[in-house]
Length: 233
Image 1 (cartoon, rainbow, N blue to C red):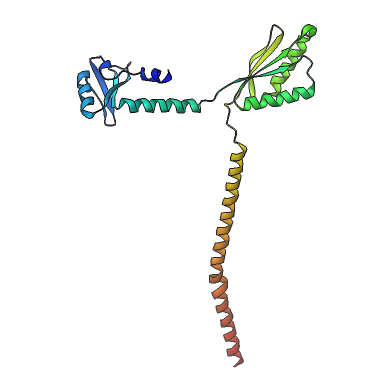
Image 2 (image 1 turned 45 degrees about the horizontal axis):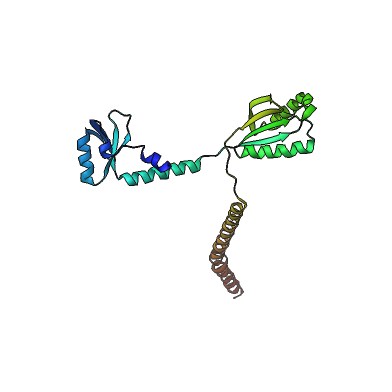
């Protein structure tokens, strides 16, 4: 179905029934009668593809239509892969949630927002606990305040039946986290790079030693010995 949608998006060859078209290519563009454009396509062994029907005149290209469709599908697939999928994660509280449970759920909410997801937190009032709705509202407002660095309030606390909701949206788009394997590979690569740099430094120092500390040192010792013998004579 998706492939048919892309295929039916463009008019090709005899499907183009306007009087004239603008042909664009690497060498520029020109306006020609549609019949002439069709003849040009046949002579080149390609198709006349209408890529911008709303222009005046419509814009066409002389290309291989099957290759053009393949490129369009590939581009659509790449764009879809780059899109960040935003999900709505739910956090549930009771009207008298203890501190340990609160901190546990706060931690998860931070992770959800850091990954680029929205958070819908709510307090569920069971039976007569609806009498503590003000307490539930205070809890949700504290929750939003504690997440101020990670998300902003999209919808203030509101009571819907037996649930009071608050909606938070991330302040910045989610960033894909590196896997542990990727981090280990990066660490090993840095260690190997550092070792190679150290080896290169050692080799350079060893190469310089004979020139500075070997021959020159021996020559200096020989000169001193010769001077000493001359003085003794």
